[in-house]
Length: 342
Image (cartoon, rainbow, N blue to C red; front, side, top):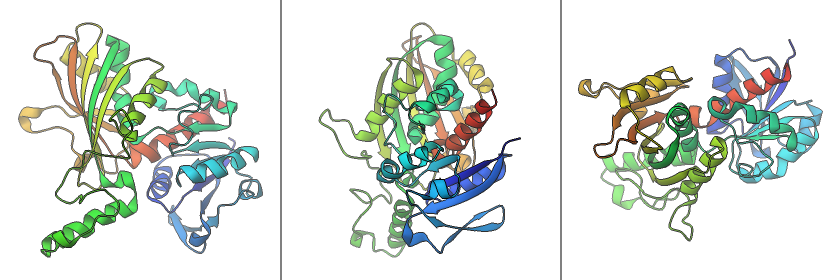
């Protein structure tokens, strides 16, 4: 079996660390792993399979020097824009977790459970894009239902954890909660979010556009259409809440014809990497606290609309650092490797 040299760009960031943890859990054909980050991180290490791997500086030449064949980028859009072409030029396939390349026409945007065949388009530019965290878990749940009932419209509200904004955002929540218990919360000045996140809910993720939607909300619109290859109506409201990990979503789905909630529940049970937790009378349903460190998307509160037979309601939860980022990137890498042997 061929083994691959793999680089992880942003290896000491929240998603980079999670990619290493996911790789530890699977049988991936490594030759070696090369952790990369900015010059200020050189001298630090990351842990992989109980070994301390030294972080090397991300440069334009490092990919050729280390003979990198797969490069996973999770260091911000500007870093991907600058360095991903160098990785491709050195012969690597780039799996990019940032938003930079997602809407490029010649770059496949992939959730393997939904559109794995699009990975074959990687040769167009040498890059495969990883979608937005909220989009990934949503389309995983949508795929089996669209296949069965022909989905026409999605209305989604998200409840997104602070880790979606990075390590410093998580730290800000913890610091604000500490200030609350010290009766000093009113003295706190938020820096990562436009308002205090502790004991609050902020109906804004990213900046607003002229149509009143935020960039995060429009990502869900545009990415869903691209992944599903369907001109589907999507309306999103994205909200930041004071949790550390795990994004939650309420979905109202409109189909072409009547949909049966019990049948939909069974379709979801059979779908790959979906776990149905749906016994509401027993208070069993997905929650962020249940999905942490899990590689599956959890679905519950599956119910028909009271008024319209073609409308279904769902509650979807997943670990945003895993399903919404690291796990999906690793699954793309696995599928890419598999396709090289076809």
